Image (cartoon, rainbow over all chains, first blue to last red; front, side):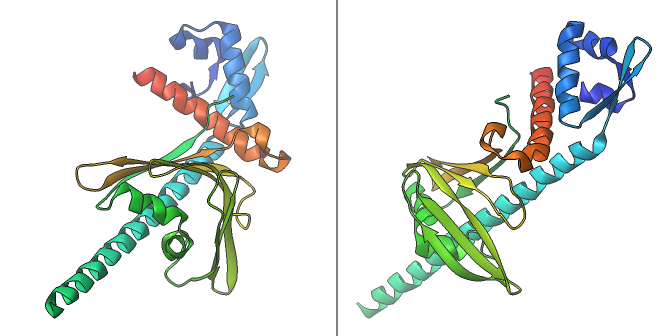
Amino acid sequence: MLRTLATGERNIGELAAPFRMSFAAAAKHVKVLEGAGLVRRRVQGRRHVCRIQPAPLAAADEWLQFYHRLWTEQLDRLDALLGSEDCRATVTSKGKDAKR
Amino acid sequence: MSATAQVKVTRHFNASPERVFDAWLDPQTVGKWLFATPKGQMVRVEVDARAGGKWIIVDRRNGEDVEHSGEYVEIDRPRRLVFTFRVPKYSSLTTEVTVEIEPAASGCDLTLTQTNVPAEYLGSNEKGWTGILVGLAEYLAQYVAEHI
């Protein structure tokens, strides 16, 4: 639905059509999207024209990207830490071997 | 709505599942990597490693203390760890992080999933964000439905 709206304004009937959805079901969907601030609706006579609001989607995308980056960095550090512990363990065991 | 937006990161480690798992809960180890920054100084690491126990990691960055904290929800060594996570300085949102560790041929594979906690658990401040994420989840669920 949002992808359809990304290409331009649509009324609720037009949004319902590709999903073989009833008008009522589509209206419910639009209401959720409106509540989330992703879609704005205006009434033109009997038509309810919907338009996408790109800013919140961009914000959500930014949120996902921020945390994806954060966790990737954490796991990089964990990997490096475990790797450096391995190196130390190897050096220590080599040291022990040398003493024998 | 039960659908939530999520972040998912997977990683292979050349270390045993137990070693990778313990790195999350051993206070000596966790402070060396989790939320540690290269120029920061780890000033507080507390881990009460039991379901319902709290954790707190404070890193001092340019003289400012950045607190990361939460509660453990599930601890199943060495396979699964679930905890809540918040950084009050930057966001009033509490999210949930699940760490799953699967043994692999050499070492293990870790999958980290972060989901936003459903709206009913949050105060009114979070409504904006939750709404956005619920909206995004609806979008993603629809995208998946269309592509399967």
